Structures are given as C-alpha cells and as structure tokens.
Length: 189
Length: 368
Image 1 (tube, rainbow over the protein chains, first blue to last red):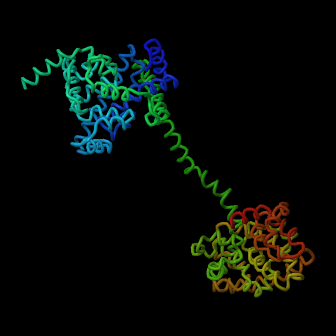
Image 2 (cartoon, rainbow over the protein chains, first blue to last red):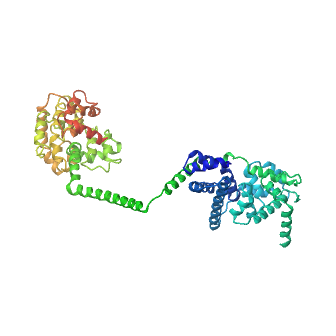
Image 3 (cartoon, rainbow over the protein chains, first blue to last red):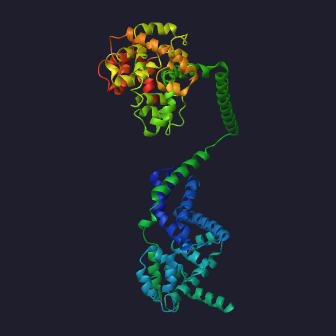
C-alpha cells in the first residue's frame, strides 16, 4: 500500500514510464488484484491481471486522485476485465475449476472441520478462497472488494453499481453464511 | 422472503455497522463479538497479507509491458494538428512512391542498357574462361566417365565432386567438375602418357602468342586444354621426369587460347582441343577422331620446345587456371596447386604458378 502523500508522485512518475514507479505500484497492488481475480477466475487470473496492469498503465497519465481513488480505479478495471472474461467463457462454455476448490468441497463435507481447515490454510489465497467459498457470486464480489481490495462500502457500491445499503446487506448475508460455515450460530451483539 | 428481509434488516439494525466494518477490515475488537468472529478475522488478515513470492513472479514482464504501454500512450497523447497528420501521410506516400519508382527505373535501365550483361561479361565470362573452358576443352569426355567411376567413390578429386553436386548426376559433361576427377583416377592416368606431351606446350613463347592469338581460339585451342589434365596423371606415374616436366610449362601458354575461345564455346568446340585421352573419344565420337590426330604433333612439338624446366606431374588445376592469365601471378597460384602436385616432385610449383595465377584461385574455389 502506498500512502496518499507519495502516491501522487509515484503515479505521476509511472505515467511518464518511470520504471521504479511502475514497479512500486505493481508490488503494492498486484497481490490484491491477483487474489481478487484468482478467487473468481482461478484459471485466467494471471492473464487477467496482466490485462489489468496494461490498462492501468495506459490510463496512468490521465489519472488524478488519492490512494483510495487509485485503489477503486484499479479494481474497477479488474472487475471489468473479469466481466469480459466471463462473457468470453460463457460463449465458450469452458470454465476452469481450480483443484483447490475441489479439495475444499471434499474437505467441507458433512463431517468437515472448518477450524482445522482454516488453520491448515495459511496462504493468502487459501484464506480468500475460504472466505468466498460458500458465498453467492454477488456476496463474494462484495466481500472481496471489501476485504481484499480494502475498499469502503461506498466505493464498493460505486464499483458494483449498487446502493451502499445493498452492499451492506450483501456483506451481512455473507457474514451469516460464514458464521454457519465456521460452525457457530450467528449471535449478534 | 418477507421474513428473511425482516430478519436481515433486524440483523442489520442489531449489527452495528462499525462492528461490521471492523469485521471485514479484520479489526473486530468488540468484546461482545461472537466467537466465530475470530476465525473470520483470521481469514481477513491472511487475505490481506503481504505479497507472496508467486504473486510477483511476473513482475519483470508486466512492468516492462506497463512501461511500454505507458510510453505508447504518452506518445499517442501528444497533441497533433490535423494538418501535420495530413502532411505526414503525404510525405510517407511520396517516399514510398519514389522508392518504388527508383527501384523499377534502375531495374529497367539495367535490363535495357545491358548493365546486367556487362556484369556478366566482366565477371561470369572470365570465370568461365578461366575455370570452365579449360576443363571443357580437356575433359569433356572424361566427364561422362567421371561420374560413373569417381562419382560414386568420391574419387580423389573432392573438389570436382563438389562442383558436380552430391550425386554427380547433375554435372554436365562439359562442366567443370567431372574434368578434374577423371585425370586423377589412377586407372585413367597411366593410359595417356603421350598426352602428357600435349599439355607441355611451350610456356614462354606460348603466353605471348596466346594473348595476341587469343581471339582466334580455333587455332590454338587444341593444345591447351587437353594436355594438362592428361599430363598430370601421366607424370605421376612413370614418364613424368623427362617428358612430363616440359609439358606443364607449355600448358600455361596454351591455356590462354582456350580461354578466349572457351567462354561460350560449348563442349563441341572443346572436343577438338581435348584430343587428350581416352575419354574424348568415348564422349564424342565424331570430332574427337579428327582432333586426336592433330594434337599429338602439337604435344610433341611442345615437349620439344620446353623440355628443360619443370615436370609438372599434375597440372590439372594449373592448366585450367592458366588459360587466361599466363603472366605474373604464377607464384601465388602455386600454393593452391601444391596439394595436387604433392605427388609430383620438383619444380612443379614454380612452373604451375605462372600460368595459373588468378585462374588457379578461381578454379580452386570453384572446385572446392
């Protein structure tokens, strides 16, 4: 993550093609972008991430805003690339299912132990996958943008073209599912 | 549905938004939070964790692409006036048209004015004269035999094989390749001792005449080509010492003549001079017979004229080269010839060198 103060300089330099600035941006946001994409299109995440960054590079000279705006812009591009990918795959009717997903389904059978699974999965992508494994696509997207993208509800609502309240509902439903998934009953404070 | 919505709404109202935000940000510190919040918080923390190695593997490639994309975009963003674009297109079109026109003009001019022909005359013709003609003259006949005998076995003359091609089938009877091989074959060599005399044509006198006489190839062509090849073989064997020696020198002289004649002259022209060995007869029944008689005398005369100096055992290449430029480059040619003459003893190199000058190099390269 890059602070607001230095983000302006970094973005400005990156817009001029400065290698160091591009590298800094890439290192700061690539993990989040990749996790977001892998959670929704595991088989094409790397290619999609590449397209996202190229799109970012082309738009850098025209970008203005703070860190939050940059993050929102970045995930907006990522989401659009993801939608394009889904359209293509819908036409081709070939959807790659990550082997990890299959493993999760097996482990989380009737007698699965979510707690143990959580402990075993120490990787970032594993945690992301667990978060959204039992969620609907909309819930998963909202949660991913909030958790992985680190975006506020308002920004998530803008990206998803929904009302902030709807996003909150999606997140709350997701939370309930997670609670069930983790083996505890929902107990609101 | 209504019950669910109500329930959700209740949940939302009961669930403080700050707490909810804290959960999704992994900062849920509410003491009243249920136990499963801890698991969710753990997942969130890990999902937001630092970059892992596999996630930055593509950094070099992607950053490079980003850089190019950024630069490309920057250039594309440069302000351009419509007029400038139009001028740029116009200039590009004119440049392309000018280039095309110039190329076509040059091609047409070359074809019309004969530049191409000039090049052929200055480069190709001399090469043919120096390298090919002698060969044709000498061993148009051997060529036929060569492929059969030496062709498969690769014969001693590796150079020849290269000219002819892999199989040797591609070689034309009058072509360069076969000629060389034939003489080298041991079996053929012994037979034409008399021929040895042929190549011998007087070296000293010959050159001078050759230059002048070059124009009328018909007269002198006979001695030049045939003799040398034959000589080489023969010399190698027995007679070399006495008789063979002179021939080589002579060879140089005759060569020039064939050169002039040779260029375009086809094998048919060559045969007469080639009287040389057996092969001639085998190849071309008609002309060889007539020609054969003539050469012997020449050879004899030549041998007589130039007895003293060197006995060039294997003049093959020497003769080929010599035709055109008998003069001064002799020494240089010698080295190239040396390998062939390895078997030959004494003065061979020196004698050979003179006549063969440039032709030797050309022949050597061509043969190889």
